[in-house]
Length: 164
Image (cartoon, rainbow, N blue to C red; front, top):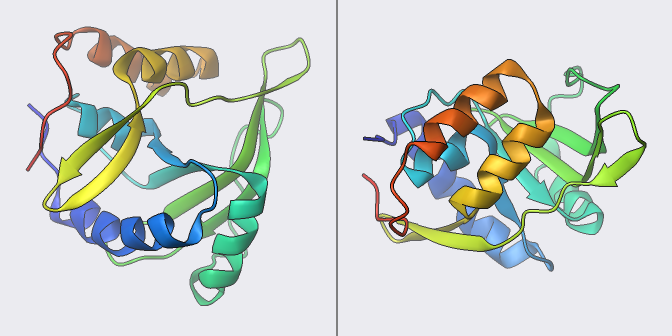
């Protein structure tokens, strides 16, 4: 069973309302935080946000004083986006505007697919459906992503629930 840590909750409580206000296009949480919100038993070190390129610009302006300018994400040969990492109480937030993946056949956009809202103490947090999370994680192909996909596959096909 998943458990939202105080650090993750503090981060989501601060950013989710701002994302609902400042993002003009659909956005979602992906990666370990999304897997945990879907019910997988995973550790979460940061919050990954999949947003449009334009919304990434808006968030970079909104959160300019929180930006970590020296951070460089790993995997530049496989991933590219309009990227920024921000410091928030709890844990860092990584914004990936227009994320693209190269699996050896050129750059392709990473699509969230069907979004599901996870209720978290009054917050509505959009995450890809479990099937779409598995698809995304498997496409990334890294060991940590494949492990998360395996954990998500073990979940029942029941709809997402409110987590605590």
